[in-house]
Image 1: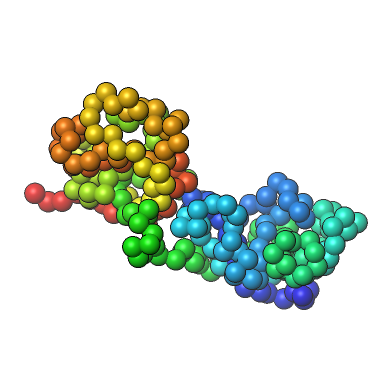
Image 2: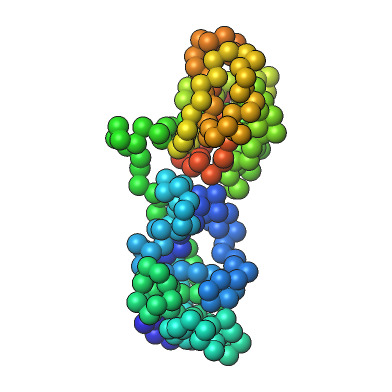
Length: 260
């Protein structure tokens, strides 16, 4: 197990949106958990890369850190007398050994009380999506203002309240289309965010006043797609509306103004 006062490399699995926040302002204690409040980490990369469990794999990020563990307490069974109170007894880190029955995966876990003991080394991005077998994931683009882009990079996308296809996140696989947005906004202040999207179940909305034009979200669809040249969009370019922002992971952002 981790020895008192030693520094170890550990890993923390999270969503891409949370990773942006952590990189911007550092780790915070979780309010609770199996070992009470603290920052949950593992020396096992495989374990960290499973988190958050049930979150889409393409949107998970692992943050690699260096931790000075301080004084360590092994918590090796459920209902251990210090399971959630180890910090009150002078310990800096609680350690759950592998295969002790506390974690279904059998992999080790650490809870570090003070986020200041943790320094960030970098991030390990999810595996790139490729191959015909994964044709539900696409690269798309979202055009916005530079101020909105900063907010999105910090905290992830939020649903728009309404639009041609109702609430959701509006994206296009056509970079040229995305770079026109926001229409009427000064070109030098527009930004295009490049994303990866797991579209899930898709419905085609190919004419105005389609019966599900604004209600597809409630009929079991994850994404609405407007095909190119169907008469719904003036430019004739395709458009997508993704209901759940968690289906979107940010690849990069770039200033899109061009000298004309």
